[in-house]
Length: 205
Image 1 (cartoon, rainbow, N blue to C red):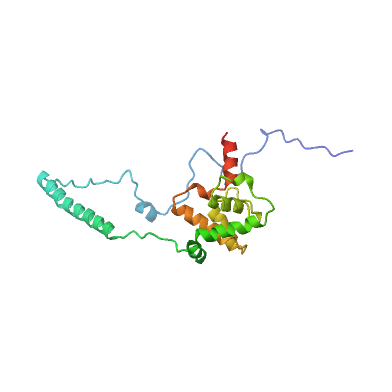
Image 2 (cartoon, helix red, strand yellow):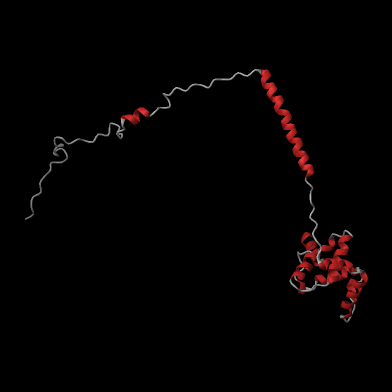
């Protein structure tokens, strides 16, 4: 038979605290004890008296005199800055010509014509579709379709020639000579490959 449980009588039957035991109260504010020395040294900002700074009254004549004295100094500084800017010489960096470019400038049209004749001699028939083109245009178009020097689409002819030179592909010096001669004439369109012009016209249409 199980042991009978002792009834506690609920919360009301619980006995109160024994004598000498303190109860917890949440109605009062609990703070840490502060020593009296520190309490006295604390200054509350709201209770502290703040003396307003004494306003200095300046006469109008003194203010005007100060402003007039400052103005010439600023003008002098501006003049000095302008003089310094005038003294600075703008150096225009002129890129040095490579040995290949110097060699290409010395080539004559006769040398370019001889180069083109050597290319035509390799063919069995003449180029019928290039009858109306100049010698320079024929040389450049042949360079455009020479795939061993890299793609010609989206790359200016001069940069393509220089890239092939850097890679050791030995591009023809006559092509560089033609490009330099056309640039000296002011022909800007010479840099764009003919195939690139055709593709751009198709896209624009």
